[in-house]
Length: 137
Image (cartoon, rainbow, N blue to C red; front, side, top):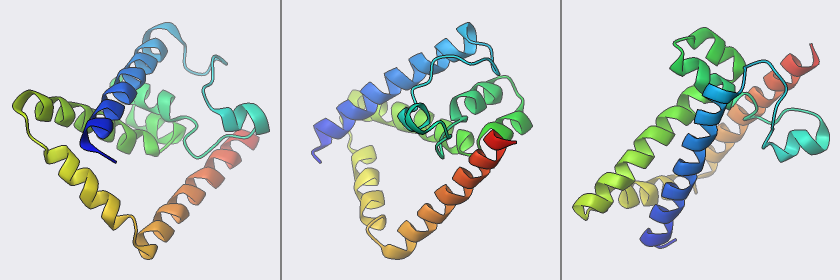
């Protein structure tokens, strides 16, 4: 994918993610049923591997790291990826660099390896089973 499209996509997704986090942090009480963007949960009634990540990130901002982990361990990595990627892209655009694009290309190449894909799928399956278990009990 061309650099311009990657950077535009990262900026768009970052703005949407930060907006969603602000809404959930200030206008939605954790634990209450509210708006869900998870199409999988809407259709099946079961949580997806990422369900709980938003509440987890909000808990991280509040300093409740244990609660964040309980919502979804992906909250930590999701927050780091969101912050680093959005600021890195902005830095690249301001200083006319392409460090993020080079990193993206390198990661994309690594993800073509079967062993790494299998490990990622296993991790997602473990988190997904855990989310379903929490949801059912």
